Length: 86
Image (cartoon, rainbow, N blue to C red; front, side, top):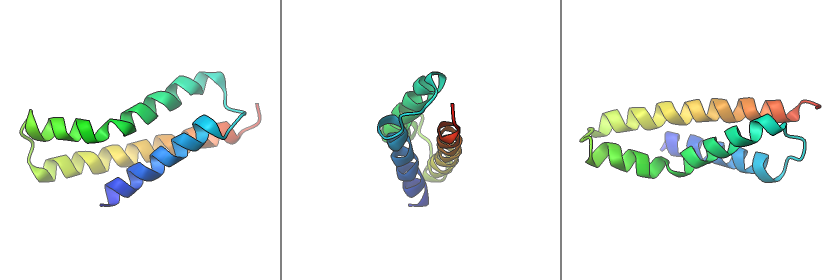
């Protein structure tokens, strides 16, 4: 549940970076979109891990939690970089 909330907040932060911020550096735009794509496909990734690789629930939850925290950190760093004057 916590990883889903962190993932949702990360996706919301990336969404605000994509559409609301006008002063984002050009070099960060592909990174922002790649992170948003990764977050949007996370349910498919975890489904693949569960079914194809036969990961057990604790391992999948650990992966979700770790990846959600990493994406939250990346989102925070991108948001901070877009707040700096160009």
